[in-house]
Length: 142
Image (cartoon, rainbow, N blue to C red; front, side, top):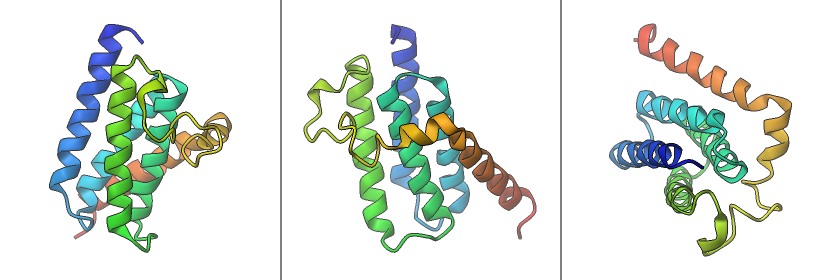
């Protein structure tokens, strides 16, 4: 990654992290904004690891928004942990060498298994459906 790309990615991840810390699981609009930002990161094409992690987080946020998760606290912890790992990846130029648990570079992990989804175009479908949901709730609901 170029230095400018890395700085922009780190800035975006920091913005998401700050927003994430301040929201409640019931704050659908803020979660939708975070989802949109994660989709934007995944569409930038930084590298396979960062793109896969962003898609993985977008899927978790989508489940929280749609209330399809049994344990929102666990999902929030997963999001926080993965955002931290993504920051490390960005600082390492996208290389996963200094990650403790290997979740982002292990091809068998749930995060990296999203690469098949990326190649089928489902990534944009997920992002588009949640963007519509956000617009609908923002302008038409209540």
